[in-house]
Image 1 (cartoon, helix red, strand yellow):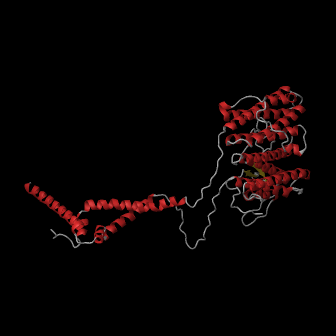
Image 2: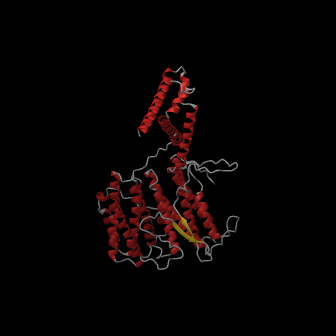
Length: 317
Length: 218
C-alpha cells in the first residue's frame, strides 16, 4: 500500500517536474532564446501546428457547408453549355400598367378586325356594332398610349403577346379549326362559329372591364385611375350589349333568383351579372365538342405578372 | 536542465503541453474554419445590394385619408338616395315583370354599396340620404314604367359620372377600389335601363353623358 502511494507520489512529482521544465523551456524560448523574432513565430506556429490548424479548418468548413443551405442551385453539366442571359428584373410601375392596357386594346382590335366583314364568323347585321366597338377600342388604345408617353414611358402599340399566344390564338383555332402540326394535333372547327365569336367577344369585353377595374388600386395617380375606370365603364357596356345579343331579352338582364338545376352548356351572359364588378376570370366555352361531348373552356384572367408589358419588352408588330 | 530538450526548444513547448495548447489550437482552428466557411455566404449577401439600383416608389395610402372620408361619405349618401328612389319605384306598382326584376336587383345592389361604404368608414359613415337627388327624381320614380326606366337610366348614369369624379380625387386605395367595383356595376345598370327604356343610340348606351354630382350638394 505504502509502495503504491510512494509510486504514485513519485509519478506525480515526475509529472510536475516535466511540466515545470516545459514551462521553463517555453519561457526561456520566449524571452531568453537567441532565436530571432521570425524564428519564434515559426516555432509558435510551426509546420505541424499549421497543418493541424489547416486540416481542422477544412474539416470544420466541410461540416458547415454540408449543414448549410444550397443557395447555388447549379447543376453539374457535361460539355459546353451556352451562356444564359438572365432576364431583367420586372419592375411594375404605372408605365408597365398603361402599356399593358394599350396592349389589351390592340388584342381586342385584332379580334374585331378578323371577324368584321366575315359572314362566316359574324352575322352581317352586327357588323356596324362590331365596327363601333372596334373604333372605341382604338380610341382607348390611343388614350392609354398618350398617358404612357405623358409619364415618360414608351407607349406600346402592339397587341399583348401573352394574351395573343395563350388566349386569342387558341380560341381562334378552336373556332375555325386548324390542321395538325408537329407539335399539336388537328383542331376540329366549331359547329357554330358565330355563336362562339359572340361569346368570345363578350368574354374579351368583360375581361377589359375587369382589367381596368383591377388597375385602379395599382395605379399610383388618382387621375390615371379615373381614366382607367372610365374606359372600364365603356368596356362593360360593350359586354352588356353583347349579353343582350347572346342571351336575349328579358332573360339577359339579370340572373334569375333561383339558379337552374342543370348547369347550362355555355355560361349565360347577363347585362348585370353581379352586384359588384367582378375581378374573377371570365369563363368562355366554345369550340367543337370532343368525343365526350365537352367543349373547351378558356379562362380569361386579368393581366398579371406573366402578361404585363414590361419596360424591357420590345414590340412585336 | 536542457538534457531533455529537442533541437528546437520552442517546438518542445508544443509537444510537452498537449492538454492546454491543443485545446487552444482546436478552438482557434474552429473559429478560423467557421470564419472561412462564412466568408462566401456573407460576401454573397453583402454583394447583393450594391449592384441593384434601388427603385423609389411612392405607394399611395391604403386606408381613406381625412379628405377621402368626406368623399366616401358623400358617395354613401348618393347610394342611400338611390335606394330610396328604387323603393318608390317598387311601391308605385307600375313595373312589368322584366323591369321589376331589374329594379329589384339594382336596388339590392345599391343597398350593398351603402353597406360596404359603411363598413369602410365605420363610425365616420354619415348614413344620410342626399335629399336633393331624391327630390329631383322622386316624381319620375313614382310614375309609370317608362318614366321610371328613363329616370333610372339617368340616375345610374349620374352615379357613374359622380363616382368617376370621386375616383379621380380619392387618395386611399381601399376607397378607390370599392368605388371602382361599384362604378363598373352601375355602368351595367345604366345600360340595362337604357335598353329597357328603348334607347338604341350606341353613344347613349355606351358613354356616360350625365353630369357628376358635386360633394356638398344635398
